[in-house]
Length: 197
Length: 197
DNA sequence: CGTGTATTGTACTGCTCGGTTCCAAACCAT
DNA sequence: ATGGTTTGGAACCGAGCAGTACAATACACG
Image (tube, rainbow over all chains, first blue to last red; front, side, top):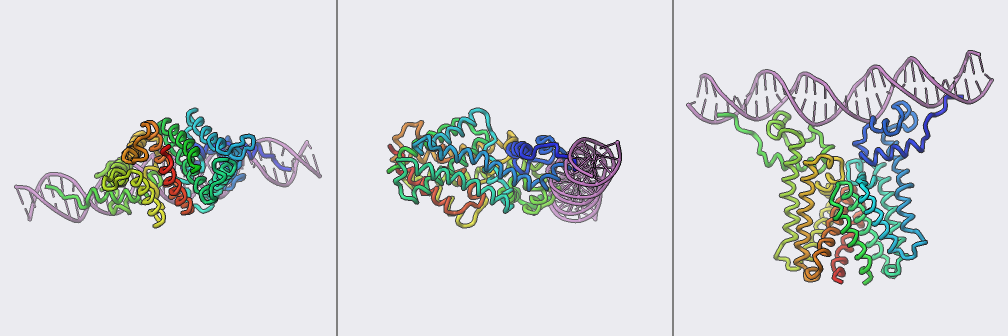
């Protein structure tokens, strides 16, 4: 017996994700968000409490969506060799940059910025990073060349790949020459071929 | 026939570097800078024009200081094997993180943030990044294992190392577990051992 | 067809920001 | 001493920020 909400909550979060992704948490102003989400101050505060809470919801959404996609790619059983899954992850990253996507990674940008001083945000970022790392480890276990490695080496390799992933997405955001991204990815593929020793 | 300046310009820039390094460009407020530099608004604007100009001076100073140190390490002829120079660079990075330095890299933070939308700042950041990459390439040329590689592969390897460097410094800033940094660096050392194929 | 209620839109509140202006104090040359 | 300059400090500016209060609105239900 009340006026119904005129917008869809999930849709609003998706739109907010786009704004935060492009501008970052601190640099996304409330007017930016309101315009991008297509609603007004009153509605936003009623529905999402405040800016930080909205960002946490966005991070959770991003974890489901983007991190989930990366994990799905890394654990995709229809690609039998885990190494190929990892290469395809970096290839997708390159394709996105080549297509003009300079947004980088929402998590990586947050990780590099000052927003990490908030413990709630830091925890959400860490959760997403762990998700990617776990996907990488799963892919390595499915790679004939790497499955036999000691577990410690597998973890170390997964971490170097995660670091590479983060570095590349930072570079993508900073509009570095595309060649750098391309060459790094080529080296990653080569690293995965020879690391079996 | 005029009153002399009461502060040392270079010293002021060094102090400003510390402030920007800790807080980032956008998040370093003028009061932050004034307090850190020990001078007042009037003096700052007389001496440095405005905040952005000060930041450009700081970036130039950082390029001389920090990037110069990295390059010196990578081109240090008293370490004959270039591979060892590269490993020592990453070891120094690890040591800094282990010692509690969570400032990461001034250039890397700027590269990941919104300040890149300013072309002057972006150019200065790119210049610093190129300096590190050139140092890495020089070290690879001095590495018996890698000197014989095709030039394209050397460049690609230098880029993957640069990406790794950036990723690690972002991770350092985001207070990731130290073990991740450690394992990534171990993998880097192993990568440099086997990449000779 | 009203009435109640949740949502909406907007005006407003403090606050902080980067940057400017103004003036008295400090200094040097003469 | 003294006059000319430049510093250093604080008041001030307009703009933009996140967040709030409140009135107008539109629906569901009796």
